[in-house]
Length: 81
Image (cartoon, rainbow, N blue to C red; front, side):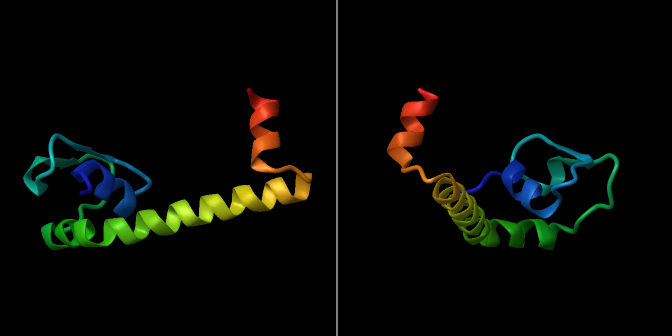
């Protein structure tokens, strides 16, 4: 389950807020336009799918880079160990 901080990083990657806990009432919007409580709560339902997309894109980019370098993951691990 996502935390309030993770949901805010997804919804507001530029930052500008402070959160203590996982409740909307604990968010302080400092240097940004506030989001609504409904947007925040909906973010919890959206987070897992968003995170999976981010992880898949990162894995795909890593695989493409290794392919361009002509390395397997094991070879890369050996080089960076």
